Image (cartoon, rainbow, N blue to C red; front, top):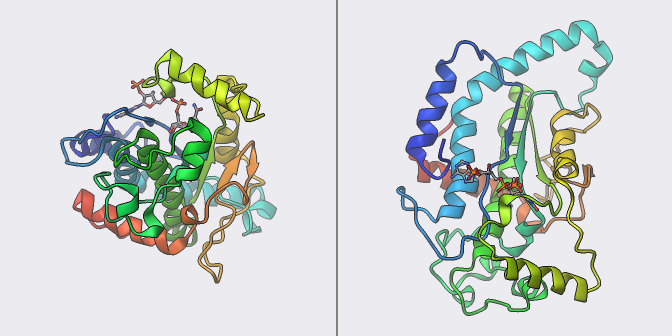
Amino acid sequence: MDLSSQKSVRAAASQLLANTSIPTIDILINNAGVMSIPTRTLTEDGLETTFATNRIGHFLFTNLILPKLIKAASTTTTTTTTTTTTKASDSSLAPPTRIINLSSFGHKFSPVRFTDLSLIKLPKELPESERPDLQITEYLTGNSHADEAYYGFFSYGQSKTANILHAISLNQELLAKYNIAAFAVHPGAVDTGIGRYATPSDVEAALQRVKDLGMDPTQKSRELGANTTVLAAVDPRLKVVDVDSGDGQVKGVYLADCKVDDEGFVAFATDRRIAERLWSVSEGLVGERFDF
Ligand SMILES: NC(=O)c1ccc[n+]([C@@H]2O[C@H](COP(=O)([O-])OP(=O)(O)OC[C@H]3O[C@@H](n4cnc5c(N)ncnc54)[C@H](OP(=O)(O)O)[C@@H]3O)[C@@H](O)[C@H]2O)c1
């Protein structure tokens, strides 16, 4: 499917739902994504392409195919109960039916810009809570991009923040009711096609800057880059995510380097109230309410 097109996502989901040779889905990994598209583009649905692809496509697809995950969760629980009673009765452990969203360290670049999802306004025109982090942008690229309404890493950051918030909402919606868990993963800097929009000289300049700042510019191999995602998907020792902490901040949802990383994210990406707002805005953008 083309994740940037809601029509394409709906067609793929219908096909999958109708496919009787796949009665259940145990693990969904929302992996596909685009990064740093050089200029602002809109999809056929009128959304900024990065947000449409990395957030809205996954949100819609996940919700549409959920019946097959719910079926898997009910089947798995029964099987697990009869074979390994200890595991099944330990409610602090994440259940085996899981949804994994690929986020990124890059979420730190930007919160969700609720008043400017398509990046039309300059950072200074946004409410403070929606402004991109110009310091971190400058730290990594040598330019703060303060005078740009659209910058590829602002849109990437927004979408990757949304991927963490999505995992929080999925836990809220699905964990207690259906025994389905969700996590968000930063895979590390991995040598893949994600940098397709960067020229070789852009990449060289970025790596040099990382070196100048005293950091190790070595990228992970693809095999190592897959480790945290696989761990999030199958490790039986992972704990369930607690979305009910008093201050609205959710812990245990973001993984990096093969472990839960409760230090490596920015607060705007793990706030349950922001996650709830994003869920309802996203329902508006796909023109459908989801009550499971
Ligand atoms: N690599 C890193 O350093 C890094 C770091 C942090 C986070 N991540 C995240 O890891 C995930 C995987 O990225 P990767 O590094 O493996 O990059 P990648 O090699 O570019 O893979 C991305 C995949 O997404 C697919 N895709 C792009 N646009 C799509 C669309 N509109 N509809 C359907 N599929 C689409 C691509 O398909 P085509 O090739 O057919 O276009 C490709 O298979 C991404 O979510 C990325 O943000 C990667």
